[in-house]
Image (cartoon, rainbow, N blue to C red; front, top):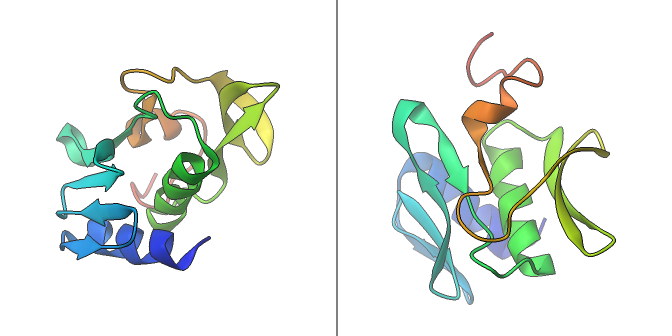
Length: 118
């Protein structure tokens, strides 16, 4: 995980503002190059989107957020040009690159989540 990713992810988790070279957070949203790629939704969920930019950097920021939020066994990955939600490196679901790709509430359906205490 890049230093900028960790800095922004920790600030987002605490609900604080932080800025990096390409990424920023106001504590409620994470922006990459001015595009909102993660935001806090209802039910204590975090929602994610590629915003039509399925790049290595976007995947790094999303994966960093998942790790800091306690979902380190999940990630996003590109396989044969397509974006995938992965669980322990196994493809789980193909992701859209526009609109909302997924939210943390969906991840709880796959396995135990220490964040929810299930």
